[in-house]
View 1: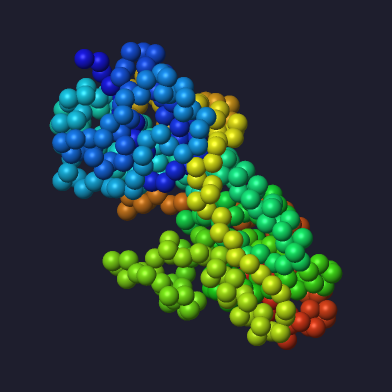
View 2: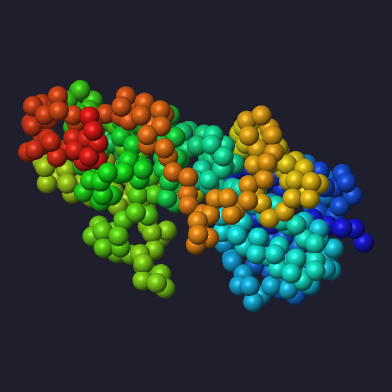
Amino acid sequence: MKDSVVILCGGGPAPGINSVIGTVAKVFLKDGYEVIGLHGGFKTLFTDEPCMQKIDFVMADKIHHQGGSALKMSRYKPHPAEFNTKFFKEKRVKLLVTIGGDDTASTANMISKYMEDNNLDVKNIHVPKTIDNDLPLPEGNPTFGYQSAKEEGVRIASTIYEDARTSGNWFVVSAMGREAGHLAFGIGAACHYPMIVIPEMFNNSSITFDNIIKLIISAIVKRRILGIEYGVAMISEGVFHFMTDEEIESSGINFTYDEHGHPELGNVSKAHIFNMLLQLKLKELGIKVKSRPVEIGYELRCARPIAFDLLYCNLLGMGVKQLFDEGITRCMVTSNHRGEMAPLYLNEVEDEHGKIHPRLVNIHGEKAKLVFENGIQCIIKENYEEASKYLPDPAEYDLFNILKWKR
């Protein structure tokens, strides 16, 4: 019986997963290993009947350029009490390859440590994945899937801007991003959206619905002063992560609640919430503007990977084999712009409580400065007189006042 390598995917999909699966399979098949794909993430790993998929060269070659994931995914997180060695012994597993975010990586590390404590040499190498681009990889390294998701997002967002121009309306767009605003910032900046709202902007002020709506109205009025009656505002859903439950409930939306009593945001359209609040405020101000909500999220996750991610994921898959051959375990594989592979261990990026903090948009970086100083449109002091035709106190809608930024 051959030694084997097991591949599983946790969390949600991202463009390039199949490229990783296919490349890992090919490089290990070449060296005589059996490659086993596990459906459902960790869900059946420790059961009597793991849901397995043998991956041969034909399958690996077929899937590598496709969107989605050939291996079914889940967010299931096994309790340590479920751990056992049966599957790993029976299949002569030498390496567990996990593809996912920080939760998947942490679980895989615990499993690998458990195997070691039970005298089984099962290494673990994790391939970091998320379209949010928020894992703390080395500076300049994107998470795989981000560039492809951004590309698909720009395609959709560009048609929304064209619709706004054609119809003379405004659109309120919400883009995915659990805590960080990378996706919203990247899409909005690429499309020249006149207003982009990401959580990182509020480094000196509070994230409230009132502040967000005032930023959108600031752009609407500024464009009207310029004689432009249409536009699009991009908002990262990550702003919700930094709001209190009371602030979220103040939106007036009827939420369902999880077992901890928190509003279940996944069941509602964030764009709808912002658009509804925007319309209420516009009517209060007597400003006649039609606006429509658009959510950009799940459409991006299973997009076909672009060339950047196809190559990047191929390199990461080969990097898994390289690190394995070097005897390295319990780490994430990383590749820099030169294609040099290096392990990134969780203890290098986690805090004293074992939490991995997200990589946020560097609001003080040159890219953010250029976009927010030159790319968006909003009320500033020089516009107060003209803006007073629409706003009782234009200073309240001045971006620098709202965000408490220095001029």
